[in-house]
Image (tube, rainbow, N blue to C red; front, side, top):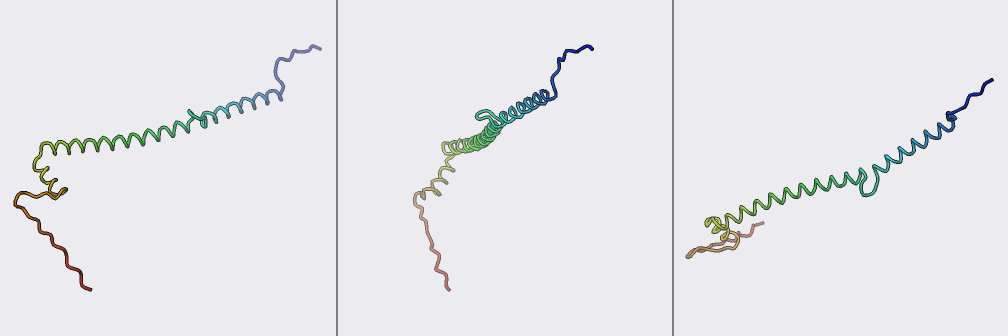
Length: 108
């Protein structure tokens, strides 16, 4: 009888290697998802923050454009300036009077 030299692994060793590989893959995937500072969840939070800041930036740009238009009108449009002075500050033209009427109390 001739004996063959065994070069393979036993069934138990194969199972152990498969389990080690599987656990390594599972822990690696969990690390990719939950790693502090650079995992998928951190990436998702950063994307939400970027979206929020982008929306805020657009809002501020629109507000800035409105303010520039307002400044332009205040510097160049005398009619607008007069209207604003009348409404906001209650200013009057020369020889102009304002009559204010108070509503009478309601009867019960």
